[in-house]
Length: 309
Image (cartoon, rainbow, N blue to C red; front, top):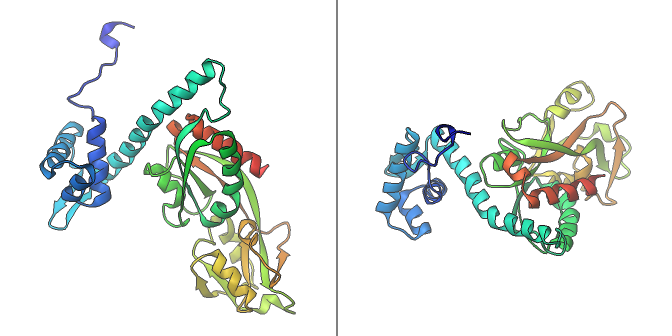
């Protein structure tokens, strides 16, 4: 490649790591003063850095006002990418050390992988699918430090946490009403059938009121749901699936729930299959292309697949 075509670093147009940290801090704290306090620098330094970043990218990144600073659409995108870039800076040292140990014959076992692994998962996946995988991962790589956040599968959901750079990997319901943001990588881990759950011993469970929660009815159930003339409109909405299951056990109604949610079922309820035409949802992982290439995320995906096999 000739010198004329060799990519060059241009400090005039490219944002430095510290500039990215400032953008993320302003977005997360909601103001220049709070960002300065978090970073341990002066407010004028934050202001100067933000203006410099806006000059480099050629657009306004924050709306300033008396109540603070909020990202513009361009700012939201810049902050999300900034988090992801900073995450790669954090991973660089651990990845290089692991590669060095592997090259010298140390392999990747016995704690060769280290650093923080940030995971977002919806409640039932965090409770049932993730812990066995993390237990095996800890045995193989005690230097890895998982950080798990439970995120409701509403709006952007766990995939949104990954896109925003707040998680390296998300466990999400795939093919639901909220599409995965473009540019992310996904893989199916398991498929769950829905079932009818009702108070134990009830003679006519389909006559009971329907209990539901906001995360339950995605595109994977809506068409089937609409075709069932025996399912009434939900009369009670609960905060999450655990609350629904408890209320069913108390005799307050019946519910239609996926398998992961029903792992917490007690003898107070009975579970009935909905047949071969019943709804099924896909549970999988979501990650970014850059995170998918890191050793920690690859190791976690292997353990999740082993758990789901």
